[in-house]
Image (cartoon, rainbow, N blue to C red; front, side):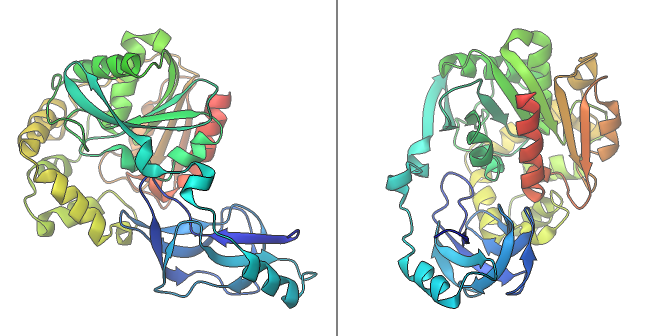
Length: 369
């Protein structure tokens, strides 16, 4: 109905099916601006705020705090004062929740596997069909779900590919080598395996350093670079995190480490801790992470700084959270000459989650330019 804007349960990540409303952040009658946090939702991956995609006046809250609802369920409605209560009643009564099958948004089907140099590698492919793809590369100990707030938003404008690096997520527990060079070669071979000749690389932390290394060694494959909380722009790194994450054997040791990734520690849900712990308990993961961590970040020093070797690089975007406790935000000052740099207050190392809408806006503007 014209003049009425729905607020719906978002789909964060490829596998999200439902979420629990944990708090409303605004009252009925509030004038909503684009990007304004409206309510908080907890999923089986993370808790976060739902931000307004459109402006309007919040007329009704329909979802109750504590209510578990499926993706795309109607949570509330915005409408101007000129819309009657009867019209709102009719809109709510007639709302039909789209199914995954109807809009082609079946997250399970989006996960795929490919053999790359004998390593079984999980990846996801989303987004529009045409254009230069955006390749998301996660960081140390992460997986492609670290981009759960970014894949769909960027995919509205460009093809998107995200992978689990070797030894991470659901890829095989095997390293192609414990160096940025070996990982960069692997990423290039992965691109060949999935038919991506050239891509905009978006890397986080260790993944950003891998992306920078690939740009140095195989520049024609790289359309642009977005480096988020990047390794490779300075020497310091928090060894308490890298060593602790590799060795943490239980929930008690792991939870405070994961909380170090965020400015807002409450974003670390119980399910997030359980999911990471399940990965950590796979045979060979502790040894692999220890080997990789010691090679790249031993003694709290980064062994390689490829992003500082890029020279003049206007095709580089650097994004950081000012409250990053893993890699200092001061490293952003070492960005290549000509790079665009954005440092966000109120965000930590996982700035792509904590300031997702801002990060997505910057990525889309960067690849368009």
